[in-house]
Structure formats: C-alpha cells, structure tokens
Image 1 (spheres, rainbow, N blue to C red):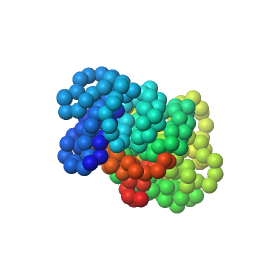
Image 2 (image 1 turned 90 degrees about the vertical axis):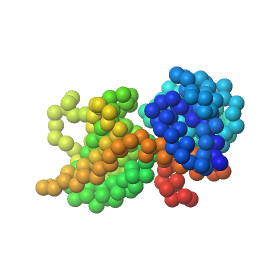
Image 3 (image 1 turned 45 degrees about the vertical axis):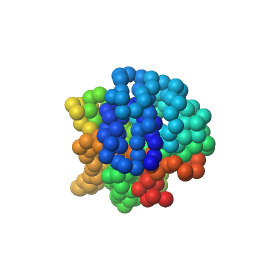
Image 4 (image 1 turned 135 degrees about the vertical axis):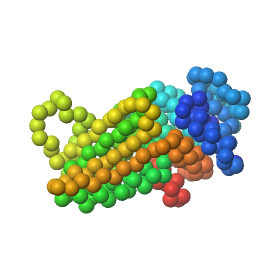
Length: 253
C-alpha cells in the first residue's frame, strides 16, 4: 500500500486524485495539504506542508507555482519521492527541482496522461519526417478560463519534442502582433486559448505545401491526469534519486 501526501488536496485536481485513490486498493491518501477550505475527515488536512507529521511514502503536488519551493524543501528534508505536477515554474524553481533530484526521486511532467505522453513520441517522429520537407510547426492549446499560466506545460513539452527533432536552432514564437514579417521556418509557434470549462485540448499542426497534418489530444475529464499522478506515486518509492517522467512510468522500468 502506497501512502500519499496530497499537496493541493482541495483543488480540482486534488479532488480528482482523491476519487481515483478511493477506487485503488494499492494506494491511500494518508494526509493532505491545502491553504484553503476544510477536509471531509477522510484524512488529516494541514494548512502548511511544514506542519505535516504523518508518515507517507510519496508526495503528489498539484497546487500552484508559489507553493513549490516549500514542497521541495519538505521532500528533501524527509527524503520523500515527489510527483511534481504543478506547471508555470520559474527558471529559478526549475533549477531548484534539478538540485532536489540529486537527493530524491522527482517525477515532473507538464501532463500526466497516458495519451499525451504517447503523443510526445508521435510529435518527435512526425517532426523528423516533415520539418525537413518544408512543413511549419504550430501548437495550439485550449484550456478553461480559470487556468493561470499560459502557454500550458503540455504545449511546452510538445514544443520541446519538436525542437529536439530539428537539426538547427529553433525559436519559440508566442504571438505575432508586434512584428510585421513573414514567418521564419525555424520557428515553433505556440498559441493559447482560454475559455469556458475546456479541460485541455492540444493540437500540433504540421503545415506544409498544399497539405496539413494535425496531431491532436482532447481531455474530457481531469480523471486522466489524476490516474497518471497516482500511477507515478506508486512507481517512485524505492527508486534512486534522479529525474523521472511519465514515460518511465509507462515503460515500468
């Protein structure tokens, strides 16, 4: 039985993870942390992670970027594996994540779903084949109107996969309203749409001479991300310090 400390327990994703864990006999939420709201009594809830004294096997963080520093300190102090799902981290925080991974196993992903992580491999392979044939790469992501960061972590992951497959220097372009010029082929365009209750849509568009290829992923519920996070929390305990991602979980290595 994997005992999890859920950071961001009362958020949308926190509640989705609780639902997944209720149906999974191999994992339990041993404690939660949330600065807002009250728990339902099914596990101890703390306002500050530093106050948590419950024994756990792994931490899942689905909160916001401002709280990540405290999570990293706690996990390093307690030598706990961390599933870091929060996006919108600063460069300084990304460096702190890299430092933490020298002491503890850290699984960080901009998207926890199986489908998206398979999509990453598809995008890299498609870029290898199409970019050199003159296809431009554009990424469009759509999310609900409550999402704080833009572009999404998943859009950046997809852009990074495309960039890794291109044998020349590539620039990410987030908007074109301030420059009047033709598009450079050595660009990856990234556009963000916010509205309504869209859970998460991502399209990678390969626009070539007289044809367009689009690789798409649609999320219809937060359950796909919750299931991925729980699978990661079960995977990490016992692993050596280092950086992990969802493809490690999928491979089971």
